[in-house]
Length: 158
Image (cartoon, rainbow, N blue to C red; front, side, top):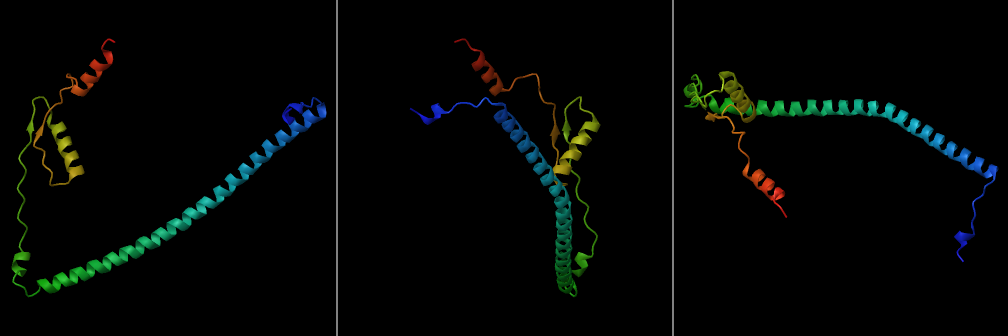
């Protein structure tokens, strides 16, 4: 016979009260422990953020100094190579104006504001060298071939 089957529940009010009080005590104790832990985190995290921000600022300042020194050395080298060279008159000439891109081919019914917004979005994302060649409306009335195939496959009879 199994020893587990020999155990019986104790129905006494003393045992029941002990279990209830112990359960409530454990729950309240864990709640107080969690409150203490979260309060400590609330005091610790802002200090850690201040220290991290200070360290990041020092690293950024140091890195900016390194970049500035590198740029200064590079500019000094460039000035030394340009002075007295045959290219000096060429380097001092004004820049040649860039050719403007041709106007995009726009489908009938698209306003100039929409064209300007699309061109600005393309220039912002792709850079100033990007060219918009044409703007067309998408045909939303037709169904994507993959979507049509899925619909046909899912609705066919068994």
